[in-house]
Length: 55
Image 1 (spheres, one colour):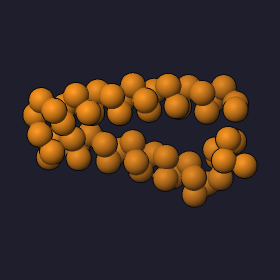
Image 2 (cartoon, one colour):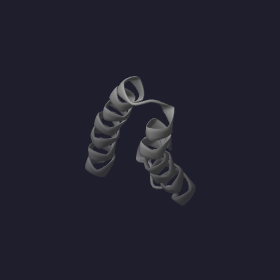
Image 3 (cartoon, one colour):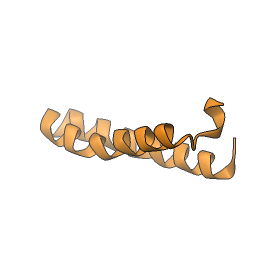
Image 4 (tube, one colour):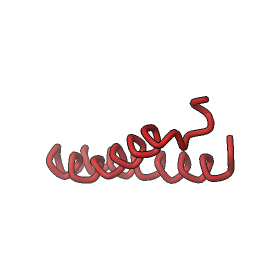
């Protein structure tokens, strides 16, 4: 794994944890709004072939 991937994973896990806390506190609509950018980011990296640990 490259350092770029490690940073992305750490930030993503932290962001996903925060999103789950929002899910339990606020509800589903806020969770969906928060999690969509994370899903789009990883999908963009996957389509670009920019994830070294998938190779």
